[in-house]
Image (cartoon, rainbow, N blue to C red):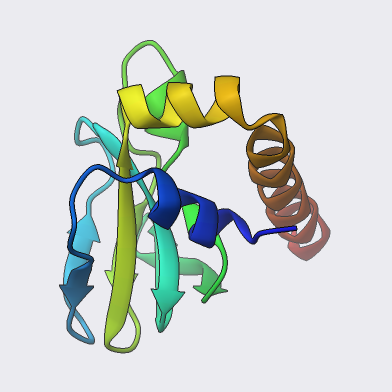
Length: 123
């Protein structure tokens, strides 16, 4: 079974992977989002109200919330903790992947659920 990030890489339309340097902002809280990301290499920190709430690693996905909520806004700020390579999947690619590869949808939901559980336990 593929990791969610590898599935993102398979379904992306762009032939290149986007690279982010350590400390580079990927997106900010409140901005409109039009894609999700899969971490191929590196680590990304997610911030809420200026505080790190989570550090995610290679193989995981993030930013998909903006693809499924009506306002399409980001709920956190994502900053590369280390030099990172990210696969990018836009909304149409995301919907195609969910429709054509049900396991992708389950893996994304599992990732999201596990991260939400971890966050809840830390409160």
